[in-house]
Image (cartoon, rainbow, N blue to C red; front, side, top):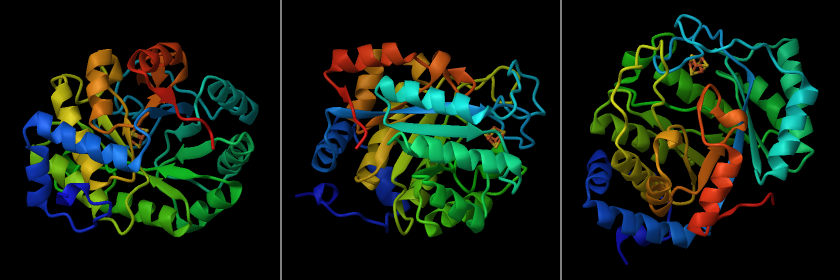
Length: 325
Ligand code: SF4
């Protein structure tokens, strides 16, 4: 049995090992990732996670890829925090359409201890009561805030690394890579599962991609969920003219993440509208076992396939949505 097919979790990956995996002949890489995927997961199931923007735009951060940053001139409509009942009704609808996870996103730099946070706590309680995995992405968190979310029933917190520590300053100047790591640690300490991945297509090198995956894979505990995003080029942002991400690069990233963190859910995230069903099938073969769905064909503020389109795709591929446990 080769090293990558032993049923163990490693936390000591070297840069050289991960680069060697990423650069394997593509079919060998996908074959190895697919084999490992089948050892650790039911490869016929794909988790559909619904992502809802509960507060959109007007963000003080300067993430170069994001249309919600207040400083960029984009077409994004700013929207204040949604009413709790509206959010719960979206969650019910998502569950009825096969989603087992519901993620609420607010375009904040950080959580503040104010009435908006109290409302988020109510939303978490309401979605949790539906029996769905409830996830939030709200920016930076203190340990006390993470504890409050955990007590309300939060299952997961999303906080992407985005890119490598070395490339981070090129993409975001209003916070540091270490800020990200600190929030992830607060989430862990509170007993909430971690959702953390990154984006490719930001202009980073292969070494940056590997460094980002290595940071995740060498954490004391692997993130339970690892979203791999292809840059969605938003008009008005500094990265709007970046080249389209090559699907084979997505396949390589997903396969490398699957091999390095075999127990994690690897999420094929942003960028799916620019992929055919066949291209997405390659991503599933490489070990992706989750997709994000969003209402109104949006993933936050970027285009995304609609739920019925996704259900058709899964049916075509003989895959089924993972049900709520
Ligand atoms: S990615 Fe998040 S933190 Fe960055 S600008 Fe967009 S909403 Fe703000």
